[in-house]
Image (tube, rainbow, N blue to C red):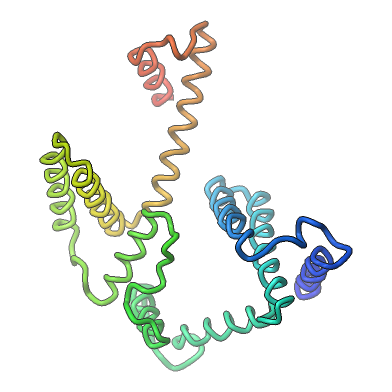
Length: 254
């Protein structure tokens, strides 16, 4: 049943891109669609954060549509088809899981992660760090870069040196914060963020997810501050920091 439904999606996209199809769909290119595939991926993350199956089902469909869209454009240009895409990922999954589809023995997820990077290196990667997209959000890029470096042993074995590095970077930032060297300040601030990302790996927290959730929490609380102050007959712009902070603390206790 899923195969028939998948085929129907492909046919719908072919029709949308056809001579009698949708003008907007027909004029799209790989380049023009780039913002949408990123937007749809973030909407999937949002649905996961909300733990809403209905939203997740819909957003996964929207993300899948982008894959079908790009594959249809490539087919029209006689470059590749959705079948080629599926065959490529099938082959890659089998090749990169020899402990499942072959005789190799791997007992833990960490062993698999290290072996995965070795396989990718054998596939033609010139550096252990290859494969991290340049356009990744900075926190996620730092996280994946550190993960990849750790697969060849470039990592601390315990958390204590990681904490020490965080405190070291804080002190270095303090030393330059009062100077006029904005470039140096930005550099030291970046080093501090990078060390915090390293800490996140040791406490098994994804920094991109953690920061996104922190931002959403701030947004929820600040909107409540706006609502409460308005209900008390005040304009937010006229409220003092102390008044807003008092409301904020009430919300936190709730």
